[in-house]
Length: 254
Image (cartoon, rainbow, N blue to C red):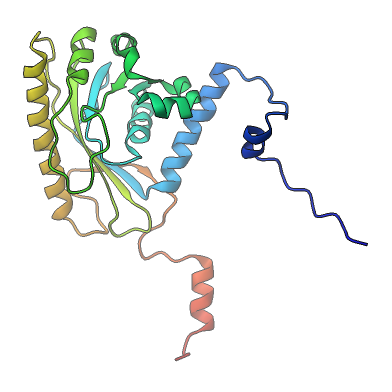
């Protein structure tokens, strides 16, 4: 007589497919805490370490970072928590429609730019990627949009260029490097002029970051950078217990 297969745990995919399983209600505060913990877990699992140079702002500000990887929004959200700030980030509408719960941790579509300015004025870090999309590896420095300058001017807060790189070097998982440049005064009514200053400062910060990393052995952190988050990935030459056991079992075998 055939036996029943063992019960499989219910997953979130099951809930999404059937929409028949009960989903317990959850307060926005609790959901926000869970999401922020999830961001931290993802950073520790997916990145070997995060190192920064320069001084992150300690007040409300508009951060205008390079956009080079999927990790970028997570990185700035995590960094905000490390310095005791909360963060908001401008996110493309299709992405936000796919992950609407990210609103709970500050994601807003471009149509809500005035709300982002209110967030910055209230003391949040507001992340606006001035490139508007992820830059392909090796692509030239792009023309920047005026959105970051507009939000900073509207909120009367500093505009901070942030060079950002997520690189595969001497670890099993990538490392992230951020260089916070000096903040810019965005009070001028000339948005294009402010954006031109931002482009110049961001390009210089990227060139400096690239040179710092290129001149550093792949196992090391560049001089002047400090590690603010250590991932689960061990040191590059650290081996797992299974690897050590296999090495002992095969010692002398050729």
